[in-house]
Length: 111
Length: 331
Image 1 (cartoon, rainbow over the protein chains, first blue to last red):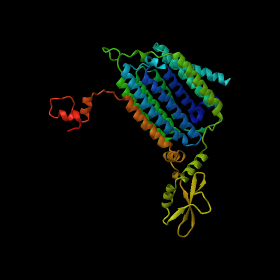
Image 2 (image 1 turned 135 degrees about the vertical axis):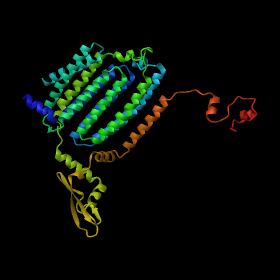
Image 3 (image 1 turned 90 degrees about the horizontal axis):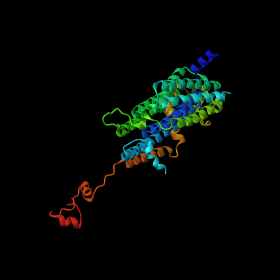
Image 4 (image 1 turned 45 degrees about the vertical axis):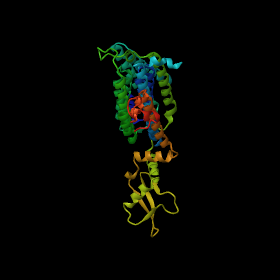
């Protein structure tokens, strides 16, 4: 039973495995976004979540034989690039004001 | 009871992540890494078992190599205290997920991902990190700022992460176990030939390799240009002069490759200008970044005039001063 499972694990690739990798990457990115206090690292974590979404898209595209999943990843890349440009500009702006990257110093913005 | 085991494994995964994330001794972190990896491996086994059926694939080993690199680099990325290393570990994640894309036969996206993400976006991040990074203690340049070392509420973050991971894994087991777990080769071939049918120029080039006379694609009574039979397909064409209807069998390598199919889908499905919209988004992001990040320098009237190549105001003893104050035109 176990040897059958072991060989099956190594030779059979299923959609579920790709989806689990995507889910784990997304969760790690989410935890990082919530736990880190450095503004730049927080934005890096959002990029990680984008990446997880892209893996899920490509996996579905392969297993459902539909190329438009890959096309959608192109749009994800576009949005990620736009987000990186704007977010980094904002980070530079905030850094000039307070000379620090600590996200908690900006918590007065919530009011 | 499979659900309970799934949730328990998710708890263990996130417990490992919590131990790695919180500031603490090396021993606790090692324990965290071990717990997390073991729980993740068991979660994998559980998910694989839940899938019904699945195609044989010789690239399984590559999948495990790439996905374990991706997950470990992601964890290292959110736990490393130096942002530069976090960005470099993210490059690892990008490279290994490009490897996963290659396994999924998405070659174009894989290389585009490496060029755009690892090449362009991450370099921008590195520049900003180097611009904004400073040591809190000028006498000890390797000291870390406090906000990089101590995470904010790691326990709460891990709880949210547990909810997310449990939701995802439950959804994968419940919903996608009946989804197609391996693409049918027959159907893939069929769809590839169908895509080729949308490219008449390509078809004409293929026919022209063996045909010397002028021709047009298709037979008159049938609309389809291609006659598809599994791995091979035949193209129907009619000679212009004699009107003779002919059939040419295409080899299997005449199928459009990944980049052609992505391009075709991009053009055919997004023809109402979504692609141009993506370009507009990028352009606006560029404008936004320039406007946000530029330094505001207040210039007084003299400096503005100097920057425009005009004579400065306020020199009453100069001979042309009378002209300048009246009109202000450059001489």
